[in-house]
Amino acid sequence: MSKKTQYLLGILLTIILGTYFYWTLCCSQCSSATNTTEIVQEAEAESQESTTVSAPIPTPVATRNAFAITDANGAFSFTSTDNFNFETSGFTPLSPIASEIDAGIAKLQTYLSENKNKSVAITGLFTSSETNTSAFPNLGIARANAVKNYMVSKGLSSKQLNTFGKLSDELIPEGTIYNGPLEYTIATADEATAEASEEELKALKAKIKANPLVLYFAFGENSIDLSEAQRQKIADIATYLDKVDDASVSVIGHTDNVGSGSANLQMGQERANFVKDYLVTNGIPETKVKAGSRGPDQPIASNNTEAGRAKNRRTVISLK
Image 1 (cartoon, helix red, strand yellow):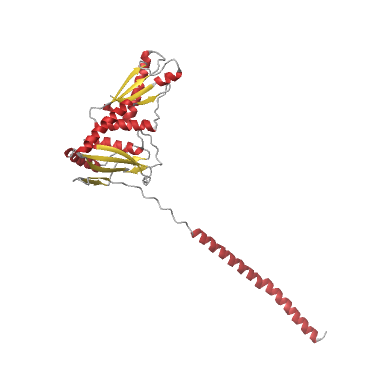
Image 2: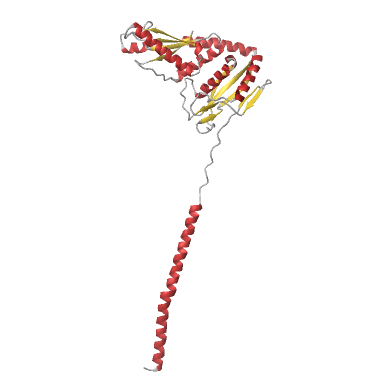
C-alpha cells in the first residue's frame, strides 16, 4: 500500500470518527438543551395561567334607609340612621326597636298633637322577589301598617297616619334582612281636603257594608288563601277602622245544617275566631274585631245539595 493510499485512508477514518463522536456527544447535549428549553417554556406558561385570576365580582352594598321624617311646610325634622327592619318576605318589624326611633316617634307625637291638620304618609317598600303572605294587597302596605301600629302604641293617632306600599327592586338586603324598607312624608290638609276625606270615609263604609268580605270553608278546612280582591277589602276595612274612633268589624261564622245545631254553632264560632286571629296577626286591632256565630240559622242557599251547603259554610267580615 502506497503512502498516498495510507494518507487518504487516515483522512477517511478521521472523518468517520469525528462524525461518530459529534453525533453521540454534541447532539445528545443539543437534544437535552432543546428538551430543557421546552420544559422551561411549558413551566412558564403554566405559571402564567396559574397567576391569571379573574377579577372578583364586587359584593352589592346593602340598602340602609334612615328613619327620616321632615315637614317641608312646617317646623319638624328628625333623622336617625336606625330604622324598622324586616326579614325577607316578612311584615313584622324585627326587635329590638332602636331607642333613637322611639325618641323620634315621641317628638313626632308631640308635633302631630299640636298640628291636627298634619298627617304622616308611611310607605312600605318591597321587592318583586319577595313573597307576600300578609292579608294586604302587597308586602309594602303590610310593612307600613305594622309601623303605623307601632306608632299608635306610642301615642300617635291613627287618624293622622296613612299607609301605602311601593315596589322597589333597588332594595338590597343584608343577608336575609331589609334595613329600613320605608319612606315617610308629612302632608298638610286644608279645610277642603278634610271635608273630602270625610266624604271618602262615608263612601268607603257604604262600599264595605254593601259588599262584605266572605270567606268560604270546605268541610273541616281551617286555612285562608285570599284573592287580590279580598286583600283589598281587608285593606279598606283597616283604613276605615283607623279613621273612625268607634268603628269595629264583625266576623260571623255560618255553617250548613249537617249535624246538630249546637255543634254547628260551635263550628261557626271556631271559624270566626280563626278569622279574627288571622286579622289580628295581620295588624287589625284586636279590640276592634268582634267574632260570633249564627251556625246554620242564616243559610243563603239550599242545604239539600252539596253546592248549596258549600255556600252556607262561610264567614262574613263586615263593619258593624
